[in-house]
Length: 89
Image 1: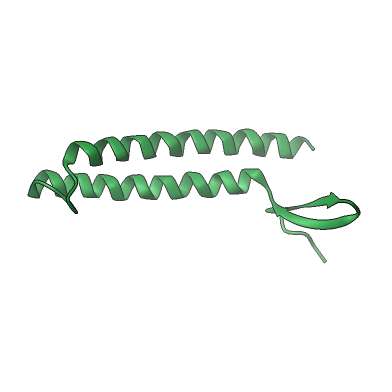
Image 2: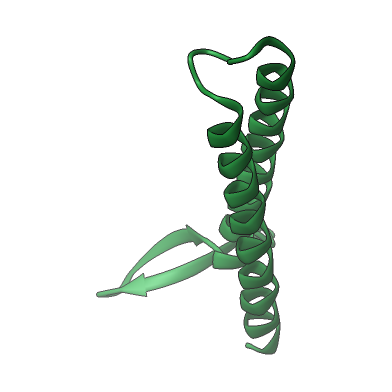
């Protein structure tokens, strides 16, 4: 049976446990935070037009979108770093 490229085996006290690779997990986090940032930016745009969005002011939504995009970039860089380390093994 062929092993998935997204899973690696972890041996603890003789038992084999399959765990997700860090690069795959960080890649998912990067994508998730980018989507949340995009949704926050859409909320910011709606708040600018209407005055507020779900009770939140535009300044808060813009800062949330910015921080989500920065976190997404950080997770992406970490995913590349861990992918490079996993490739060396």
